[in-house]
Length: 218
Length: 218
Image (cartoon, rainbow over all chains, first blue to last red; front, side, top):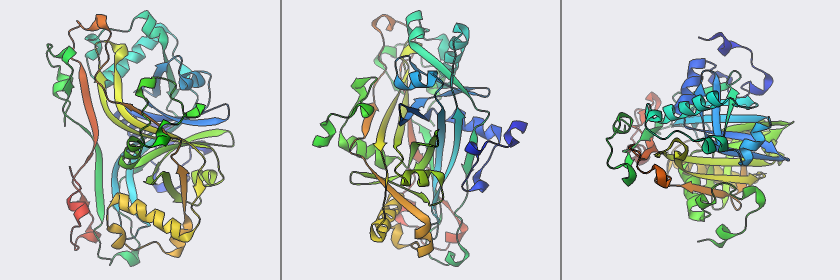
């Protein structure tokens, strides 16, 4: 296990509730970030706080996002506005004997900090290639790469995952001793993200089906 | 369609990018809120902006959350701190001819405003019953209801959905005319939330399996 995972975290990222759910294992963090396609970003501009979903990807210990130069969020984050990013995977509903002890199983990561702009052209292109790799391995060699106008209209931002706080709940219901005799079903109703059968667009109908499409569905 | 859905929205909830994706249909909004189990809430305390996932449910035109009296988020939101709540359902990856035109299909709602505390005991209990109804229809009659200590330790908050902004993207890739000849597969790699087989806890092993458990899995 990475030593960074056991560092003392600053107050803001300390798990204040349910400390037994805290899990700072870096492999778990990377697993959550890589499995999810979308994160939620909180930031404040002119006194208003916003929560916006956006695609993300990871390289080593950095989280990446991208967007239009003109978007409010990209402009605010490019100025170094403090941000909080949450990534959440819901794994199931946990049904207990008492209403109060019902809960959810989930894996989540929350990151605090400031994004930085990925300025250098080669680095920016490499980052965008990684996003394509996350979507479909090998596809970056098949599609038309971004031209100068497209690349210039896109901003790529990056933030360190070094201070990410991970919370994992993966357990059966925790019931009070005195409730155990109540005759009600207990357990987990699992939820997961599933991959359904690909839908082919007519503009790609005459081409061979690539492996990442054929192997997509569960 | 509800007339409120066509009201002019305040600047903060105006869809600034991709206006063609805006869809203010109230039925779509309710569908998104009801299908998702988890929302993300952005709020600021003492100059720090946070993004926290939490369970939510809906009654008519209000969104509800609950939590421990002692949690930082519940305390901040109870004080009337401005919040932004995002609910996002990812429906698929959209694969285009060019890297730039790749996108995602999704349904999302974003709400701005201030939560209010559901104070009255009967109203609070009714709200918590609705959460249980969302988890499993009829289960509120089978479990032990919250006792005074549990109810007092829980706070229920509500916020109006009247100003919610809905964005929906549900389309095939939109490719540039000059890219149509590129020999690469195009279409949608669909994603959906699936319900897997329930996992029974030994504390409920001797009881009959209720309908909401038997009918859970897809």
